[in-house]
Length: 384
Image (cartoon, rainbow, N blue to C red):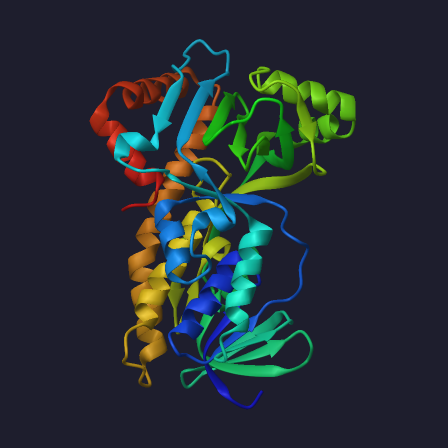
């Protein structure tokens, strides 16, 4: 690869695909390093700002083509603790919205991105991993897993928690590994959710049913890993656990896909870019799947970078300025969102009475105070 690309994006997940396509749509010469990985059978609840960005990028003409609307959120305190919160019910209509957002199957969203990328001549894809990178005179030289070499002015790391780009930049990551893991699978419910996402809050984490379409639902169950592994190892035990955790509100539950368990961790960085390189998605931040913030923040990262790449000046110092501005604009959003999720998850999993009282009081306030509800709506949807 003798040419010098304007942008090289490392990482084949949804954030990496979105970043590569956004840069190519700006007329930049883009190299996307996307080694093949396992199919991502998970789903993502994306709030309206993220959905609006995806629409503007041309991935669908209507989100209903590949997604299911999320018009209500219902939170049920099932902790059984001394301080218990009231049931909280949030409706998009309160904010004058048809829906808070949409639930997308990651495979469908990824396929829509692939179709968009196929139509962009400025986008070159290479199914190889980044082995090492070195910068000299404003140009990054990339050594790839297949023995080839590539060069780029701006390096974009969307390569996950173990980011090679982050390691190359020397940006330390603060990481907290939790005792809990998340189990995900697809279900069919006897009584449908409609457009309502239902969260049962248990001491180790939420048991969340997210509407897919019709009677279909996606399960995200956070619990200690050993309990999740034991539950899914036996079909009868797993069925009983689903009935108990859902409080039998939705009738008989049929498991449609193999349950998969993911370990949970929190990851944060002090800066999101430097020296002509930036970090997006889980290369810069990762949280437990509570509050629907992970991919939403990752797409905000892409939108912020896209706005910077839309500026016409691309002289010799362009990549350095882009990285510095991106870091200045996005690092506070990452820190704020990370603190919110860590506090929310910590208050749910904590055995300390003050933390339980604070969480209960907060849900009471959100239930009864219109001003706080409005602010919660805005924050939850990613409006800063």
